[in-house]
Length: 161
Image 1 (cartoon, rainbow, N blue to C red):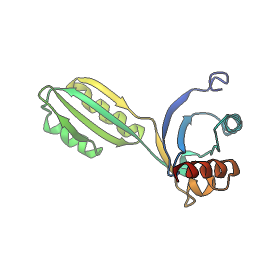
Image 2 (cartoon, rainbow, N blue to C red; image 1 turned 180 degrees about the vertical axis):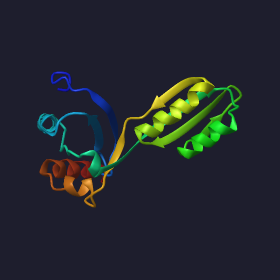
Image 3 (cartoon, rainbow, N blue to C red; image 1 turned 120 degrees about the horizontal axis):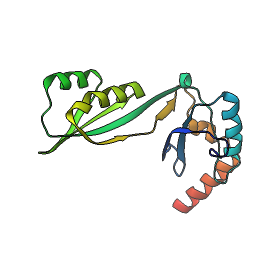
């Protein structure tokens, strides 16, 4: 679907949701609302998709994560202090490496990556965006209103019982 419409996926995250047996896909794209809504309609028609939700950046709280391994175990105090400003922390240290991690905006993860470049980055991993909706209405409350989902959850509960 995305390739046919020439839509680039900026990030994709799949994780368990607060509803047992249901996984949440967070797909980030840079498209108009009209294109996004048409895509949502197509996704909703797919097998095993219970519901799609459209949220703007203003309606969500989101973060990305970065793990960065650098050569050696020594870093200078100036870099350590700069990393602290961004909330980055040393996660693991060995004789030949140090791993730093940070969670935050894309700007934060990019800034930490730039700070660590002079130390010699040997490995880097960036997560897709993870997000929650700011509204008080939990997604599982919305999902309970969907009849096919209720049937599915009843079957799952019967199997567990």
